[in-house]
Image (cartoon, rainbow over all chains, first blue to last red; front, side, top):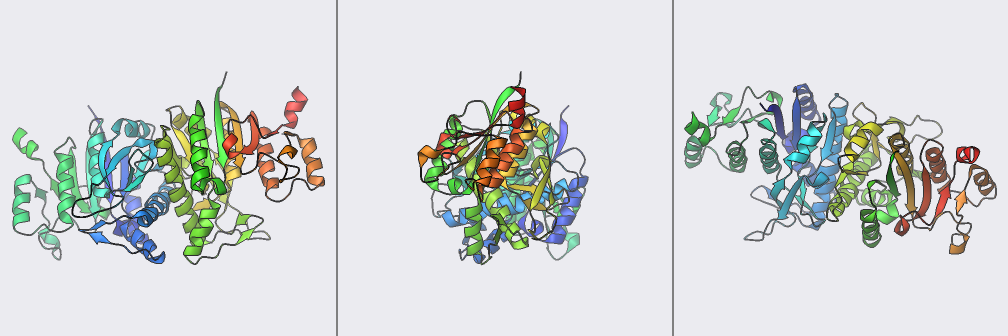
Length: 264
Length: 264
């Protein structure tokens, strides 16, 4: 029987506000057993770019990453956000270790090919080393992963944190029973973001198609749910989308694999 | 018999120029066996602070680190400089892992007490976890250490890289035969910086006192040599001060312990 592990993905808005970050780190410290935290930091990067006179250009919520912007996200994600989380978790008795995909060659990516849009130094994940990561975890280390990968040729690449969470979860699923929890500012996927009672408790492949067709799921929620399905369809045991102060995973929207339905 | 390990400390001037960094990383990649790299980054931090309109104030070569400056050094040392070195070493087949003192609680420090000068968020090293570090090293990992520590209460602290190198070398001396090499832009400690033939091949406690009295060693070289003696007097096997392109340790200035003299 495999041991359990909890992977928490937390977005920019939460890690960048003092109070919500503190609450998140308190909750994260309370999670028993093996765990991993994967964080964003986009708002801090945008703010830092502004201060440096670098224009932030986004296409479909993805950051166009030229060389100057790559420097900013390397500083902000790999340095400012990551190392502050590490120090604050250490203060809570969590043996945190800050990582990018370049560290220990954990997550290798390729620079996204130029099609309609040239995203610049943006990485599409190719390979995640679950063996190396699990070796660290088995020493009691808690990985804190910043959304940066590398191409193996010396270049860092800006990489979507939701995708990194899904890929990390898949790679660790070989070693563990993985619960992946995507945290953001809402209680889960909502029919009406203004109405807490409209939370959708379960999404299957079938119901997802209907939600998309009806326009209930749109915009930035689409890649998030796509990532969630990518994880649950590839060995991850549980995927939940929920609010950052509910990371025990009891509440929120549960993403259910088609495979699970077939097998049951 | 203990295994050998080589610890290289490299300063800001070398890591911040593309060509000298490339040479350093080529040489570092060629070092056989266990190794650690500890880097500075002061010039990049000063430049980034300037771009952000933050004044850099130095006292005796040490940076006064207010909250805004701590953000800058966290970004620059822990993110920009560290993660780029990691990615570039990975491209050279070195299994690099970027670390600060907060990661895995490796190096705990206390905020320097305010005496004549308030250095702000500057750390004096209290404890270095050589056991944890050697566990990582025994997995084939090559630690790349940025000059940041933490206080255990959630605060990062700006810390002198020469001191971190000495403390790391001392902590690893329990497990390994440690060679510590301080690299900078000169071939070693010189009687006359303009004359390569004036290299001082060996410094003992006795000769150091004379060099100080004669004013041959002064300024920033004093804390560097003090750190070197701190290492060699506390279990480190070899300490050499040399040029960054000579890190095989054959050339340069060798620091010899008083204890070594007594025992021989």
